[in-house]
Image: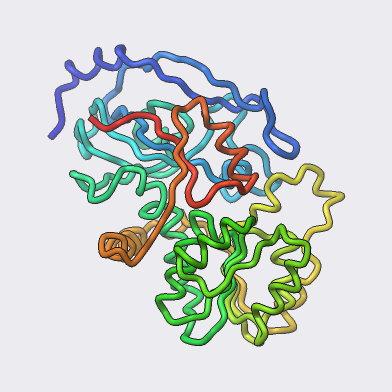
Length: 355
């Protein structure tokens, strides 16, 4: 059902949008002044457009890639454009046939309170979600969204077998926590790597990993060696840097490596002086398979992944954690927290409640 254009056009004048715009490209970690929070009027909708209000906004390591990267997997955000970001939203006005007022959607809403939905304004089509929602809205930018889907597709590719050793970096994070649980479900022995004793306790006691290494410990390499006495068969990589470099030296013959994220690389300022990976020759020496992965390349498999994850979530076989910050203003601080590694699970912003 859609409402008539003469009702919806003037209605958009009631909305004022707040958005973060990218003003300059960072060199290293994002700093004050790179993003500016602006207040702007929402223009009346044209035929074929809808207006969506953001409910929850995801803040991800990829945000830093989109600000400035030599070869990003999506075009860098243009200077003065709204910062790219994935969100869950609700349609509040529509002149677009396939969406009605009240519908829920998920997609590239951007770092803003309202976004216009049409064939040109978003980086990918907005996915209309079931109504009523089968889970809290926040789940659709987390365990039932791109992070959970990344974990599902990664474990599907890696296909860990009973008795094989799987190493998951950033094991307490939004992706790694789900990936490890799915690997355990297949009978693998799962070794997590996380950034504090508290995180390691959570990974083992709450998520069911076999063990977890604190990479901030002075002897973390020796601990990882001891935890993988027969080597590593499967790697779910979320970090990169020296952690990945050491894991490469533990790989068994014909190991499989799924490169889902490289968060240690994203905040590097001067790439000409950065050491980078050294042990990548082990991919050849061990005849390993390494796959680089971007979740939006596999939109056709999202429904399959969501169904799989939702069934386990509703039956209590899958656990996930969220850290929810309030309001759009908190977006830059949320990005800092993503890279500090201080949180457990998914970091997201609560922007508005559904109507």
